[in-house]
Image 1 (cartoon, each protein chain N blue to C red):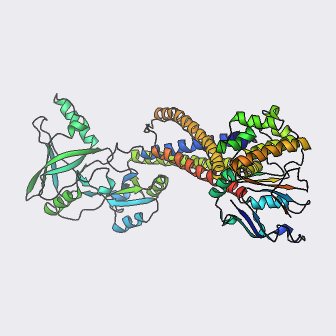
Image 2 (tube, each protein chain N blue to C red):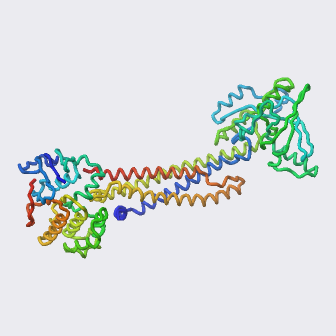
Image 3 (tube, rainbow over the protein chains, first blue to last red):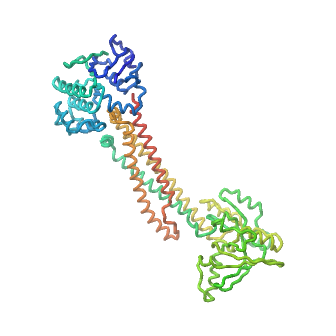
Length: 213
Length: 394
């Protein structure tokens, strides 16, 4: 699925001066299967990019297309289908349920598509070093641990695109690498692409290309 | 899991108050509608005259005996009565203006003969099937409605002759004969009892038969209307009674007593019904507000569920089913308590001489179903509005 941003200018960012190569106000194509770094300083609209691309806010001029469909035209049924099978996300604020355990947070997503067994989910937790948190409430985990849960939850569905908004902001270099490997492996398996927004750090990963805001 | 997530943030005390309110409202609603129906049904079937019907005549006093006051009804008096909002219908009671004798005509029953007085009333006042209650010129058999007192008299006569007394059903099988005549001619007709009345003192015949007799066997002179039938509006019998007193009219006391009793009980039950409807409305409102509160507490959860791929409709369904279950339990409990309450109240009414029907009235069940449907609709709309508001938070 190709994602095209045609002269998109979010209303809150319209008064800010953007660079010539910014995705805001220009045509930008997210080519299928590519691994893209979205590089920007704070306040330039990284989260806005995530939300507009995912169809969670429409306060912008221009158009965003999934293949040739304007995202504004999708019905609730279509968005549900897309968010279950085509596009996944790691939000900057993680969007976990603090009152639920790690297990419940993962299953509440995984049960929609039955991507993994509980054992496979536990194995993924183990890979990123938080296997012992399986039955703990998310609300009492550290931000770094919660980020890892949010990443695994985002992987627990089929997708063509994975949009990640500063997913490693609370992780040390070692855990960042573990997570990035897990993400890359899963994305490769699915033949999908991802967009990773950062404050300039490429996390020693070889991206296909970089976009700027 | 979805349910665990969405219903974790509940204020159980508020829910309990809303549930108790709904339960009481539902119980009183079903009970009051049931008894309103049963009280209005009271007396139907046992009397061939329609419900809330009175036979009225002018009170006889010294003036009427001296010929100063009239005892008959004029057309204008009848028309004026019809204008009263608590009187649904007024019709004259027509009496015979010819000689009539009534006799047994059955080999199994001893001979009995008597001159009688017959009357006819508008069929609208009779609780009898029209195909049974008709006579056309040339018919040899006349359907009649017999005063129950007449049957008592007949039974007394039979008992005195050493013959077993007859029941209502058996009496309806006995063959009778009418002889109608004037000074010049006479004619015979068979007669068959099709029902009994406690309220009319004369044998009732179809209007067509009365017209035939009055035209062909008239004794001469104008027949005055001295009795009329009044159908009073349900629950307004007090006004009918007041009207009768004010205009110097009178009716058989038993008819008035039943009418008055039904009127009083119906009014009381309507008051309870009104309170119940308000209680159900308020408690449902509290439940719906509780749902709204629950949804506002779950704003984050609903929004996040939608973002990770849950369909808004599934979330609406989760809220809807939860509240339907609560109201279903409330309705079920209300129905059970109503039934137990009914057993107790039926006994109280029966002990008080008011033998109401014991079957559960369909209207009370329909009211419960209506309340349930309205609540289901309101809760679905509330849930849908709340969830889709989060969906549209672009």
